Image (cartoon, rainbow, N blue to C red):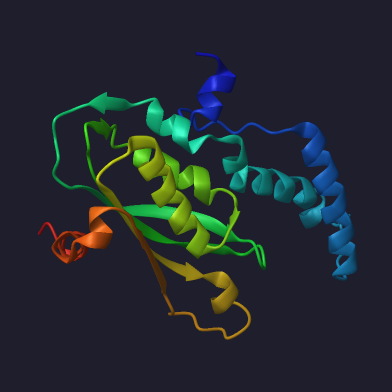
Length: 207
Protein backbone atom coordinates (compact mmCIF):
# COMPACT_ATOMS: atom_id res chain seq x y z
CA UNK A 1 0.00 0.00 0.00
CA UNK A 2 1.40 3.41 -0.93
CA UNK A 3 1.72 6.32 1.51
CA UNK A 4 -1.07 8.10 -0.37
CA UNK A 5 -3.37 5.09 0.03
CA UNK A 6 -2.50 4.81 3.71
CA UNK A 7 -3.37 8.46 4.25
CA UNK A 8 -6.64 8.53 2.34
CA UNK A 9 -7.84 5.23 3.81
CA UNK A 10 -7.35 6.53 7.32
CA UNK A 11 -4.67 4.02 8.28
CA UNK A 12 -1.87 6.46 9.10
CA UNK A 13 -1.85 9.50 11.32
CA UNK A 14 1.00 11.36 9.63
CA UNK A 15 1.24 15.12 9.45
CA UNK A 16 1.40 15.96 5.74
CA UNK A 17 1.13 19.49 4.46
CA UNK A 18 0.54 21.06 1.09
CA UNK A 19 3.25 23.70 1.11
CA UNK A 20 1.49 25.90 -1.47
CA UNK A 21 -1.64 26.00 0.65
CA UNK A 22 0.36 26.62 3.81
CA UNK A 23 2.08 29.61 2.22
CA UNK A 24 -1.19 31.07 0.89
CA UNK A 25 -3.08 30.69 4.17
CA UNK A 26 -0.13 31.99 6.20
CA UNK A 27 -0.02 35.14 4.07
CA UNK A 28 -3.66 35.84 4.86
CA UNK A 29 -3.11 35.25 8.58
CA UNK A 30 -0.22 37.68 8.59
CA UNK A 31 -2.64 40.30 7.24
CA UNK A 32 -5.24 39.31 9.81
CA UNK A 33 -2.75 39.83 12.66
CA UNK A 34 -2.07 43.31 11.34
CA UNK A 35 -5.78 44.08 11.08
CA UNK A 36 -6.23 42.99 14.71
CA UNK A 37 -3.66 45.59 15.77
CA UNK A 38 -0.75 43.20 16.28
CA UNK A 39 2.77 43.35 14.91
CA UNK A 40 3.24 40.12 12.89
CA UNK A 41 7.00 40.78 12.88
CA UNK A 42 7.48 40.67 16.65
CA UNK A 43 9.30 37.65 18.02
CA UNK A 44 6.32 35.73 19.37
CA UNK A 45 4.31 36.09 16.14
CA UNK A 46 6.89 35.65 13.38
CA UNK A 47 6.02 31.97 12.85
CA UNK A 48 2.39 32.19 13.99
CA UNK A 49 0.83 32.50 10.50
CA UNK A 50 2.61 29.34 9.36
CA UNK A 51 1.70 27.49 12.54
CA UNK A 52 -1.96 28.47 12.18
CA UNK A 53 -1.98 27.41 8.52
CA UNK A 54 -0.55 24.00 9.42
CA UNK A 55 -2.99 23.61 12.30
CA UNK A 56 -5.97 24.41 10.08
CA UNK A 57 -4.80 22.03 7.40
CA UNK A 58 -4.54 19.25 9.97
CA UNK A 59 -7.86 20.11 11.62
CA UNK A 60 -9.60 19.88 8.23
CA UNK A 61 -7.73 16.91 6.76
CA UNK A 62 -10.97 14.93 6.78
CA UNK A 63 -11.72 16.34 3.34
CA UNK A 64 -8.95 14.10 2.03
CA UNK A 65 -10.36 10.94 3.65
CA UNK A 66 -12.99 8.54 2.34
CA UNK A 67 -15.02 7.30 5.33
CA UNK A 68 -16.77 4.53 3.40
CA UNK A 69 -13.41 3.16 2.26
CA UNK A 70 -12.24 3.12 5.87
CA UNK A 71 -15.13 0.80 6.71
CA UNK A 72 -14.73 -1.33 3.60
CA UNK A 73 -11.09 -1.95 4.44
CA UNK A 74 -12.11 -4.08 7.45
CA UNK A 75 -15.51 -5.62 6.66
CA UNK A 76 -15.98 -9.28 7.51
CA UNK A 77 -18.80 -11.75 6.97
CA UNK A 78 -20.06 -12.90 10.35
CA UNK A 79 -23.22 -14.56 11.61
CA UNK A 80 -23.85 -12.12 14.43
CA UNK A 81 -27.06 -10.17 14.80
CA UNK A 82 -26.89 -8.58 18.24
CA UNK A 83 -26.12 -4.98 19.00
CA UNK A 84 -22.52 -3.77 18.66
CA UNK A 85 -21.84 -0.62 20.69
CA UNK A 86 -18.76 1.59 20.66
CA UNK A 87 -19.24 4.36 23.19
CA UNK A 88 -17.31 7.33 24.56
CA UNK A 89 -15.48 8.00 21.30
CA UNK A 90 -13.72 11.34 21.61
CA UNK A 91 -14.68 13.80 18.91
CA UNK A 92 -13.07 17.11 18.01
CA UNK A 93 -14.34 19.35 15.24
CA UNK A 94 -14.57 22.97 14.09
CA UNK A 95 -17.82 24.92 13.96
CA UNK A 96 -18.25 26.24 10.43
CA UNK A 97 -20.04 29.38 11.64
CA UNK A 98 -17.23 30.83 13.77
CA UNK A 99 -14.37 28.39 13.13
CA UNK A 100 -14.11 27.66 16.84
CA UNK A 101 -13.79 24.11 18.21
CA UNK A 102 -16.53 21.90 19.53
CA UNK A 103 -15.67 18.65 21.23
CA UNK A 104 -17.12 15.82 23.27
CA UNK A 105 -18.11 12.20 22.90
CA UNK A 106 -20.07 10.13 20.42
CA UNK A 107 -21.74 6.79 21.07
CA UNK A 108 -22.42 4.49 18.11
CA UNK A 109 -24.24 1.19 17.73
CA UNK A 110 -25.21 -1.01 14.81
CA UNK A 111 -26.94 -4.36 14.44
CA UNK A 112 -25.08 -6.48 11.86
CA UNK A 113 -26.88 -8.01 8.92
CA UNK A 114 -24.26 -10.44 7.66
CA UNK A 115 -21.24 -8.15 8.04
CA UNK A 116 -19.29 -6.71 10.93
CA UNK A 117 -16.50 -4.14 10.81
CA UNK A 118 -13.20 -3.83 12.66
CA UNK A 119 -13.95 -1.85 15.78
CA UNK A 120 -11.13 0.66 15.28
CA UNK A 121 -12.67 1.72 11.99
CA UNK A 122 -15.70 3.28 13.68
CA UNK A 123 -13.67 5.96 15.52
CA UNK A 124 -11.71 6.53 12.29
CA UNK A 125 -14.97 7.26 10.48
CA UNK A 126 -15.88 9.72 13.23
CA UNK A 127 -12.55 11.52 12.74
CA UNK A 128 -12.89 11.53 8.95
CA UNK A 129 -16.11 13.51 9.19
CA UNK A 130 -15.18 15.54 12.27
CA UNK A 131 -11.94 16.87 10.77
CA UNK A 132 -13.88 19.22 8.52
CA UNK A 133 -15.79 22.45 9.05
CA UNK A 134 -18.97 21.13 10.59
CA UNK A 135 -22.17 21.60 12.51
CA UNK A 136 -22.95 18.95 15.10
CA UNK A 137 -26.29 18.05 13.54
CA UNK A 138 -24.79 17.27 10.14
CA UNK A 139 -21.84 15.45 11.66
CA UNK A 140 -24.20 13.14 13.54
CA UNK A 141 -26.16 12.34 10.37
CA UNK A 142 -23.05 11.80 8.24
CA UNK A 143 -21.66 9.20 10.65
CA UNK A 144 -25.01 7.41 10.74
CA UNK A 145 -25.46 7.42 6.97
CA UNK A 146 -21.93 6.22 6.25
CA UNK A 147 -22.31 3.18 8.50
CA UNK A 148 -25.81 2.42 7.22
CA UNK A 149 -24.94 2.77 3.53
CA UNK A 150 -21.66 0.86 3.75
CA UNK A 151 -22.51 -2.03 6.09
CA UNK A 152 -26.26 -2.28 5.36
CA UNK A 153 -26.98 -3.28 8.97
CA UNK A 154 -30.41 -3.76 10.47
CA UNK A 155 -30.03 -0.40 12.15
CA UNK A 156 -27.60 2.30 13.25
CA UNK A 157 -27.73 4.57 16.31
CA UNK A 158 -25.58 7.64 16.93
CA UNK A 159 -25.71 9.95 19.95
CA UNK A 160 -23.29 12.87 20.23
CA UNK A 161 -22.69 15.14 23.23
CA UNK A 162 -20.49 18.20 22.69
CA UNK A 163 -19.40 21.49 24.20
CA UNK A 164 -19.12 24.39 21.76
CA UNK A 165 -16.55 27.12 22.33
CA UNK A 166 -18.62 29.48 20.18
CA UNK A 167 -21.16 29.34 23.04
CA UNK A 168 -18.63 29.33 25.87
CA UNK A 169 -16.18 32.02 24.69
CA UNK A 170 -18.49 34.42 22.85
CA UNK A 171 -22.22 35.01 22.34
CA UNK A 172 -24.20 33.71 25.32
CA UNK A 173 -20.97 32.63 27.12
CA UNK A 174 -22.52 29.59 28.79
CA UNK A 175 -19.48 27.50 29.72
CA UNK A 176 -21.30 24.43 31.05
CA UNK A 177 -23.87 23.88 28.32
CA UNK A 178 -23.79 20.58 26.41
CA UNK A 179 -25.48 19.97 23.06
CA UNK A 180 -26.84 16.48 22.41
CA UNK A 181 -27.83 15.20 18.96
CA UNK A 182 -29.03 11.79 17.86
CA UNK A 183 -29.69 9.92 14.64
CA UNK A 184 -31.19 6.47 14.10
CA UNK A 185 -32.01 4.08 11.27
CA UNK A 186 -33.78 0.75 10.93
CA UNK A 187 -34.72 -1.12 14.07
CA UNK A 188 -33.47 1.69 16.29
CA UNK A 189 -36.19 3.84 14.76
CA UNK A 190 -38.97 1.28 14.64
CA UNK A 191 -38.38 -0.62 17.89
CA UNK A 192 -38.63 1.30 21.17
CA UNK A 193 -37.13 -1.64 23.10
CA UNK A 194 -34.00 -1.71 20.92
CA UNK A 195 -33.53 2.04 21.14
CA UNK A 196 -34.01 1.96 24.92
CA UNK A 197 -31.43 -0.83 25.25
CA UNK A 198 -28.91 1.28 23.32
CA UNK A 199 -29.55 4.32 25.51
CA UNK A 200 -29.19 2.18 28.62
CA UNK A 201 -25.91 0.70 27.44
CA UNK A 202 -24.27 4.05 26.65
CA UNK A 203 -25.14 5.41 30.10
CA UNK A 204 -24.18 2.24 32.01
CA UNK A 205 -20.88 1.98 33.88
CA UNK A 206 -18.59 -1.05 33.75
CA UNK A 207 -17.68 -0.55 37.43
